[in-house]
Image (cartoon, rainbow, N blue to C red):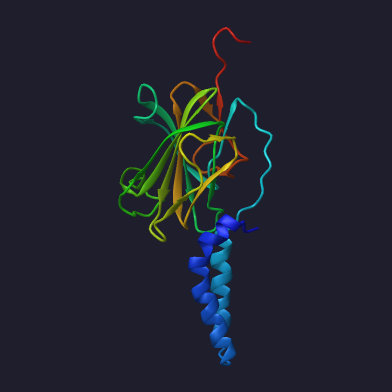
Length: 217
């Protein structure tokens, strides 16, 4: 499924090979089939499937499709105290590239940071690459989502604005082609439910579960 928003982004990549394929086929060139195949393959990168979610308020959901590369403690200035649990997901060109909110809450901060375009599967990409940062304040505290661009298309499309109220599993943007998405939570607030190598789906796979507050059974 390709949503209207995804198509508006995809068409800049699809129309050239599509037009080339049509021209070549009209001239009897079988190579036009390759161009049409390339257009279809590119279009698949921008698919945007429906994923209904009945969210558990104690669960933090995956923000991206792909496989988990890191579950670790990290410094995050947008997290109170600066100490965070970071869960990183690498998206290959075969994955759905629409990102979704891991929690419900209000978008309180956003920042786009220019940077390099190191291959997103490398650990250095989290500190060096072009990225979009989003802080979401919800009933369980703050979650930070970091969308990191890869080396191919080098672009992130944002679908939310500061001050907006969003639901867990709601679409928040799209990273063009290969990329990485990090979800950060305050250390000690939640226990991870995944480990490196696990496959996850945005808005569907539980990443972590919030701990019970003291005195609550």
